Length: 107
Image 1 (tube, rainbow, N blue to C red):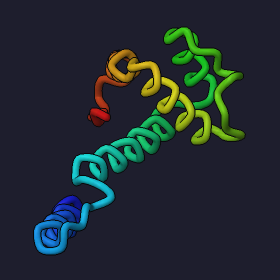
Image 2: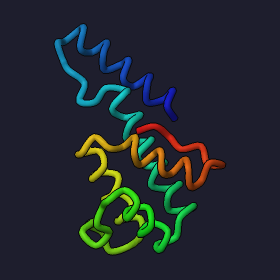
Image 3: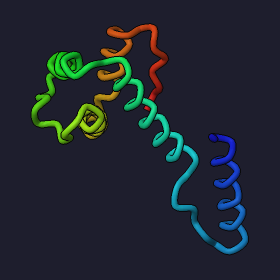
Image 4: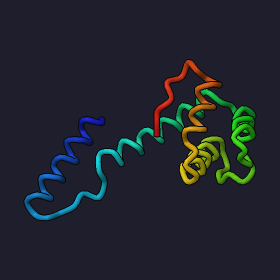
C-alpha cells in the first residue's frame, strides 16, 4: 500500500511542476496516518480495558477524560492526547515495556 500511495504522491508532485498545483498531503503525512491506525489496532488487540486504565494511570492521564465510548475510541483519544503534548515517546516506552513482543510503530 505504501508504494501505491507513494506513486500517487509522485504524480501529484509532477502535476505541481507542470501546473503549479500543490498536493494536499505529503507521503510522510499519509505514512503517519497509517502508523496511527496500526497503533490503535495493536493497542486494542494487546490490551483490555482494565490494562488501558493502568497505562493511562502510569502515564498520568485521566482515563475518564478521554473521549470515546468504547475501547478503540479511548485508544484513539489517548494517542491524540499524547501527540498534542509531545509525549508519544512516553506512550511508546510504556507499550514496549508492557508488551515487548509487539513491534510498535513509531508515530
